[in-house]
Picture 1: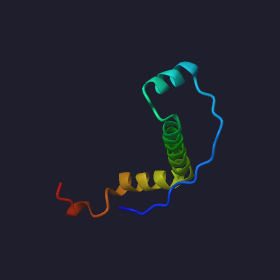
Picture 2: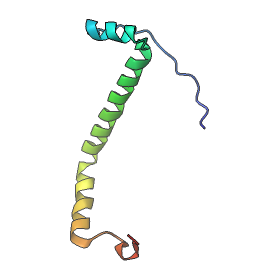
Picture 3: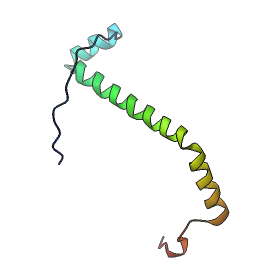
Picture 4: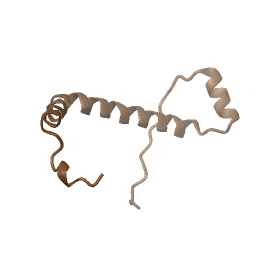
Length: 79
């Protein structure tokens, strides 16, 4: 278990679909936490996409090497 300091929060203005907001409130969804979770996921996905794009050449090179030579140490695999 990691000891993490509580996140510092800042108020933000968001525009949200009226029907979605009404439904969320009716279901007692914590709007701030739900928005934070959604934004965190969008940030994670964008970082992943950027990493893949930045490392595309190396990944393709590695894949070509494996296609030509096979997996390193493959003879030791037990599956």
